[in-house]
Image (tube, rainbow, N blue to C red; front, top):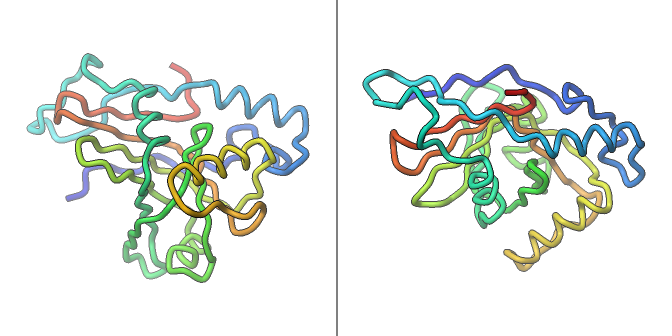
Length: 198
């Protein structure tokens, strides 16, 4: 059953980020915009669902972004969903790191998901956690993180896995546009809109 319709896809450039922001020597203008975007929490709303699901109209009981952000940071296994060129869906568990409100992972562009995102960068990331559901939708692109971000990525990998990614090799970043979370359904069903002001 399809519950959600993805918001309009956005690219990192739509957030005022320049290409230098993800290189070892970020520009001053880009760095300040990145810091501003990192500090801005997403807008919390209720998602559009059928009325008979019983989702409340007010925000009481919604999940604070700080909780969803923490669950994303603490996850060990993430599931990514992409779309094959012929429109069929593809989902796979993967290692990764949620750092500064972005999801980073690495791997070969020859994988099924790698070939999918080469054709269509739309992606969904979902954590493997039994008691709560947390997912973000967004756009993925191949990047070379700056040294500070890459250090955090390596630390996150090292704390969970017996592997850390090599700097500058096959690293991908998901820029979230919208997210969802819930624990107690339907009371806590929450939607997060990124890059918007309340």
